[in-house]
Every structure is written in structure tokens, then in C-alpha cells.
Image (cartoon, protein in one colour):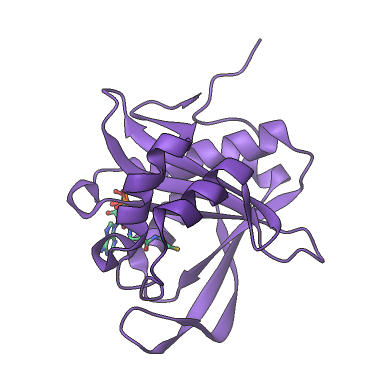
Length: 183
Ligand SMILES: CC(C)(COP(=O)(O)OP(=O)(O)OC[C@H]1O[C@@H](n2cnc3c(N)ncnc32)[C@H](O)[C@@H]1OP(=O)(O)O)[C@@H](O)C(=O)NCCC(=O)NCCS
């Protein structure tokens, strides 16, 4: 369990597959800036959650929970370009809990966790150029815009959108902000 100040991240279990399927199949959860959800079955999600793999490469799902155990979202890390081994993160908070700082904290926890547990020098996130909430949450977590990828994302409105690539380097992270570490 990765414990932050207001939320925890725990690795998704088989038992989480039903509501992950409900979330991932719901355009309200996916939001306006990701592609219209390609429907997935509980079985498909269960396999992904248990194997920590999607498309044959590492993909780890976490459940974002409030301190009282209420499930309010999902966060993940995965290898986005296997030939380069780029570590990328993704995240979403249920609509009724957005705008309360939980998304930013989930990202900060993932950043701490990945830099503490792996010998990586950078990680990245790819967002719709109009996704201001996601952009702001990444900036608050220390990410910088690295570039624009034109017409990279097919969004839920059925349109091609430009993407912004955000990244954070290990030397920009410096020390954990959210996770406790041993002295
Ligand atoms: C992106 C997302 C995870 C952000 O989580 P969140 O909990 O709502 O974000 P936070 O409350 O931590 O807010 C982060 C910052 O964005 C700002 N923000 C939130 N919603 C915003 C909006 N619609 N427009 C502009 N800024 C916004 C907040 O004010 C805050 O900045 P501030 O502290 O300077 O005021 C959430 O909006 C979401 O789940 N969206 C749908 C899924 C998605 O797009 N995921 C990302 C794919 S790349």
C-alpha cells in the first residue's frame, strides 16, 4: 500500500475487476480527453490486473482510495514504447471527486514510488492539449512540458487532438514529496 496524505494507492486485485470494468467502460469516468471507451469485459480486466500486463508489456493498475477506503479512482504505470522502455503514467478520478486535489496527490505518489523503486531516469505522461486539469496536476507534481505531438489522440468527441508530452527527470524530483521513506 502506498500511503499519501489524503489518498492511498494499492495495487488492483482480482476483486477490483468488476468496478474497474464499470469505470473503464464509462465515458463519464474516461472524460472528454481520452478515447471513447472501447468496451472491455470483467474477464479481460481481471487478466490484465492479475498479469500486470497489457499488449504483452508491463502495465500495473492501482486503485486510488480515500483514507476511509472509498474507491475514488485509478492510477497506472506502464511501458509506453517497449523498444525504448519509457515509463509512462495514467490516472483518472471519478467525476464527483474531481477538483479536490486527489488527482495531483495520486500522481505525486506514483512519481515517488517509481523513482524510489526503480532505476529509471525519467517518466512521462501524454495528455490531450486541452486537458487543463491533467496538465495542471502534472505541473504541480513537477512535470514539465517536453513537446507537442500533433493529431496524436482520438478523443471521446470523435476528433483527433494534439497531445502534449510531459516528463519529469530524476534530478528534478530530488526527494519524495508524498511517500514516507526509511531514515
Ligand atoms: C485529470 C484528473 C485526474 C485531475 O484530477 P483532479 O483530482 O480533478 O485534479 P486536482 O483536484 O488535483 O486539480 C489539479 C489542478 O487542476 C485544476 N483543475 C481542475 N479541474 C480543472 C479544469 N476543468 N480546468 C482547469 N483546471 C482545472 C485545479 O484547480 C488544480 O490546480 P490548482 O491547485 O492550481 O487550483 C481528473 O480531472 C480526471 O480524472 N479527468 C478525467 C480522466 C483524465 O482526463 N485523466 C487524465 C488522462 S491524461
